[in-house]
Length: 106
Image 1 (cartoon, helix red, strand yellow):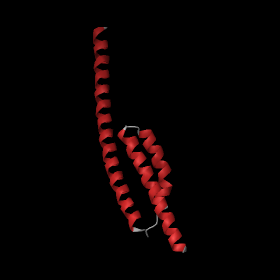
Image 2 (tube, rainbow, N blue to C red):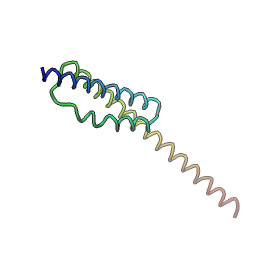
Image 3 (spheres, rainbow, N blue to C red):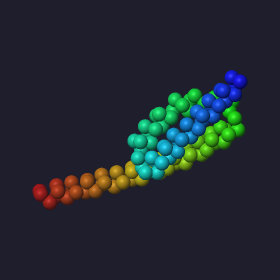
């Protein structure tokens, strides 16, 4: 009976981690990276509490969590690259304006 109770608790834990994972995915889809990071921080200790022995339903949820995490990480990397490109372009424009002002006023 104790093993069944432990398995039920683990399944509930995996379900909770999955729900938090979906919340991270949603925040990331809105480019709300602060919210995604806050949820990930909340999820982390729960994720570390998942044991190796799992029921089949929990294993399926774990596979879904891994898939969502992989996709979200890829999206985050893409967003980071886009932001870096935009930042470099803005810095180049700022430098060009600064050079123009130096030349125009001297």
